[in-house]
Amino acid sequence: MGLRESIDSLFRGPDGMDLTSGGIGRPLFYLSLPIIVQNLFQVLYNLADTFWLGRHSTEALSAITFAFPVVFLMISLALGVSVAGSVLVAQHVGAGNEDRAAYAASQTMAYAAVISVVLGVLGYAFVDDLTALLGVNETVAPLVVEYMQVYALGLFAVFGFAVFMALMRGYGDTVTPMYVMAGSVVLNIVLDPILIFGFEANPLFGMLGLGGVEAAALSTTGFTGWGIGGAAIATVGSRALALVVGLAIMFRGNRGVQIRLSEMVPDRSFGRTVVGIGLPASVEGAARSLSITLLLVVVAAFPNAVSGAYGIGTRIFSVIFLPALAVSQGIETMTGQNIGADEIDRAAETNHFGARSMLALLTVGGALIVLAARPIAAVFAPGQPAVVDHTVTFLRVSGLTFGFIGVMRAYTGGFRGAGHTMIAAVISLVTLGFVRLPVAWIASGPLDVMGLWIAFPISNVVGGVVAYLWFRRGTWREGNLTERGPTRDGIGSNAAPTDDD
Image (cartoon, rainbow, N blue to C red; front, side):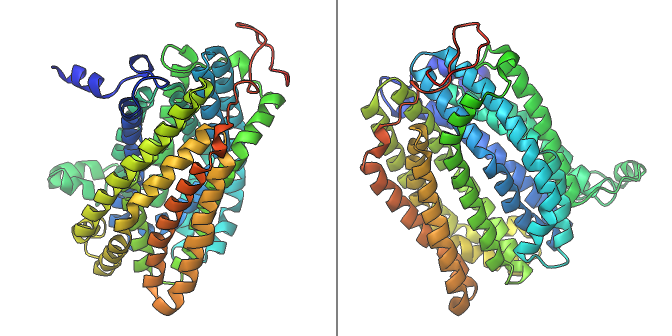
């Protein structure tokens, strides 16, 4: 079997599997595996920044730690429109109405453009105030502002590409976005060290084995890099190129869901649908981001070594949680398509199967992280023993509860796929806002930095248990949106949907 045949056997598009009949494990695997790869690429963006900025300065590493939750907050506020589009596309595809799916996708991309531009302008204008609220010290604050202003200006590129992936996922195509993401990540990895360090004293030269002559030749350009601003430019630029490719794919419509320029004038009827489904998803994302941001207020009270360890630890967690995020998104799509096809029991079993699998897989992964905590931490903070020590403690305290994160992610994906985004929002709010943040805030007094670390395993367990018990109530079963979702007055018509549709 050749390389291409081997890849095709692992990554199957929507034409190669049925999400609404037959077994559950196989289609969920084929749907989720490309998402795992996509999410891995997403983490590589963050890890590349962390890796190179850690070699630039401790202040830059600390700044990216504080910038990340602000970035996440901006994206989370616009997240609802992508969730709404993905859910509507999935349910309409499950119901066999690809015309409605195409209209939903077109409208979603249009609303994404409007919302991300507005949020980008607001983010650029108020990033100084957000940084001040976080209590960032005066050596790190200017670096946070520099990174965030570049990111805010390019928010549509970042968010638009995320919407492209969500719409394709709702259709059942997770392979195409994976390939586009791969190209974007390669470009980012190439640009990162160049734009951060320039061509003088670039640590990449030593890693590539370039001798003094070659390095000197490159240094004659006089480009000394833009530091943390260069990292932001690399990320935004590579995402902008990926968005252009994604839009071209969707306009052609020969792979996955199609969008049509004639259907991209924002329609108020669809807007109400987006608000009904998407607003709770935005609340969930914003609550998650806000709790992380407020947690940084606790982190900011400690030395820079602790904030650096917090940033490294949370990025390592994001790698371990890749399967849970992928399965959650896969469950969202399968739940949506099965509800659209009136296969309610199959939708329920999809959620239970995913939760069981993630509990087992992430518990094993967490145990491995506990055993290898020190060498892993040393990779990201060479020559910084204080950062390494704090990171090791963070990883060891949290590792054995990772499986509960998998359970929570599985069931919240099911809630979103059923259109019950408010339930997913409440679970996140309880886990992060009413458990993790208060525990960290209160316990960090008597227990010092250990009080910050123990907030994570406690909230992980609570989140998994609450999600499981809520799903068992069965309130998600009334989630068919196909009768009241967006439609057109006929195939090929450009008429806007009406409320009666």
